[in-house]
Length: 416
Image (cartoon, rainbow, N blue to C red; front, side, top):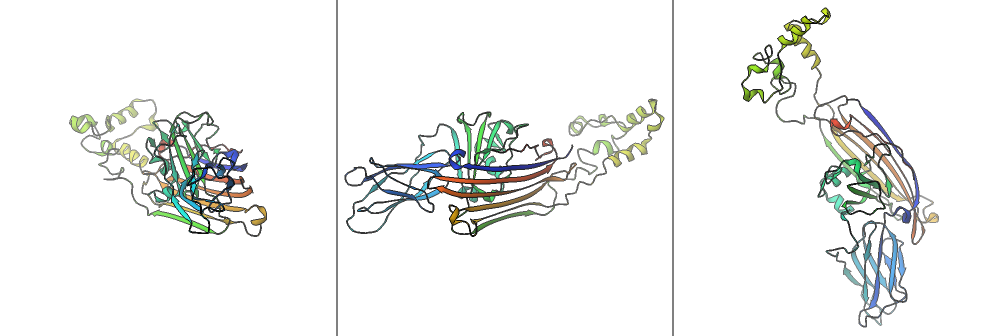
């Protein structure tokens, strides 16, 4: 198997969030709790962000370009008690409805806090899909984005409903990462930088195009405009064999016994009872091989019994001991850009780096699969309803071809 090395460079992603369409929307209506009349001019804000809106003459409001996660939404109006709805989940490309009924209040009083309830059936979803939030991602017993996707119903690895991975559309913050050459998706993104993962296993919209079995949308986190924070995730397994039982190089193993067992190595495995023959590869015996070398016209390849066995041992001499550890190191850090954050719309950054090594069960031309990737994401609020993202992703993969296990796929640079 020949080794393949992949270099990934997602150059510059400079688009507004509305164009990328990897955000959600919050809308609803605000009414008087006693009369049911609509309330115009009510301020509705998304806590912890600069997003908000005011209700129109009929009490309706809409907040656009909301990054997918869980929020608290507050409605306030003079003469009414301020009301906060907590646990409001926003998902990719969906509208979350949050209605308020404000209680009239002549003087300042206590704030009303209501816990949002997610509907059992979402009327605006026509596809078979699952949205995995950052809280759910952090609670999963995995440390790899592929594993997050692979444990969903109907998914095995990156195969959705039995399809090939090349038939699955994969996007990171709205940018397709499917190779232009063979359509294989690139999933190299830091696990600690993931905000939400959306898996659609059927009924997806035509907007995605050129896919057959499913869609995976990944939204990465945004940096905070007010504080610095970071996440470090490290997993390490010391070098150890990854198979049960005896070594494949043991003379009694499936791969070695027909050629080294004194009972059959000379005359062939037909000397075994049928019950044993069915457990091992068929072999005609070294005597038959030796006779073939003597009967041909090339005197340089003639073998005797000792030479034949010595040649076999030499060809199978490779040491298959696993000498390198398996590890997965993942780190991300975010916060406001120093000195220029406020003048540039709360400019903030997220930087992440991930490196992993996974040794094969039996070393091939390479002993294992190795991958690293780095990402930089800058976000600025141009207006209250528009954000500008600058995003770069770079990664490398090294491994054997896909028939050898977890292989590296050829990659083509994509920019939008």
